[in-house]
Image 1 (cartoon, one colour):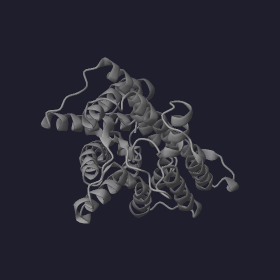
Image 2 (tube, helix red, strand yellow):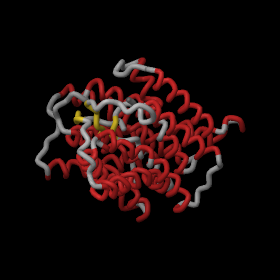
Image 3 (cartoon, rainbow, N blue to C red):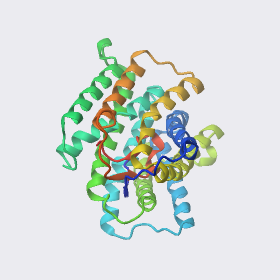
Image 4 (cartoon, rainbow, N blue to C red):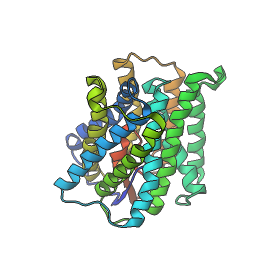
Length: 337
């Protein structure tokens, strides 16, 4: 997230063949869901700020190459760059770093669960601060369900505190950053005629510059890439190149085939992949209330977005290019509907 949007008609072609979109849909969920695993591997050797700097720079380079191949260009309007500076900070640099700090203290699969709370933060901010949405009964019910799920994930009846609790708060803080960046970009950037690829590439360039300034001041000079172990170096490259570049291409293809609303349902698979990959690859264990809480959170998100109950009428949807979704941020739809 910070996530920069182009505006795309929420149009779904007539019943596209399952085989035309399902492989890409599942691959996208796996890529974004596995991002939490690679963050966990990265922070084993790198300071969270250094990991974020390297992955964002790798993502920026990937999208700049794609931009050149497609003969697209970066924005030229200084006002757009000004807004992207805000979005780059709150939608890329800060949340990516907070997930890194959080995963120093908690399991990667739990970070994937907390990432799913992003739409629950988006809606109240969009209603109260940016006034891009209206809160109706459906949204209120969805928020209540979602935050009940948050309490279940935390296991508040067991008491809270300690490093594990702090790590969970950091991951929720990352989701809150996304929750601020998403309605901001919808209000100030979504109407741009520039392509989503152009805006996403520019956003990552801005975030790279921000991190290049802040990281040395907070964490010291970043280590040379050649000094990293092959495992960590691979994690950084996967987060940057695959989690942004390849995922961006796949997501746009999915939107083109099935429409923005259907493509956005990949959001619900990301925590599933995060939990499976964390358990199978890292041997992480979770208690019963964490997946149950995750299901309640996703139910709340589905209700608030109108995916359960009456089907909403087709409308223009803000489509979120996933250059910044290497952390597994819920993709495609910019705000709950």
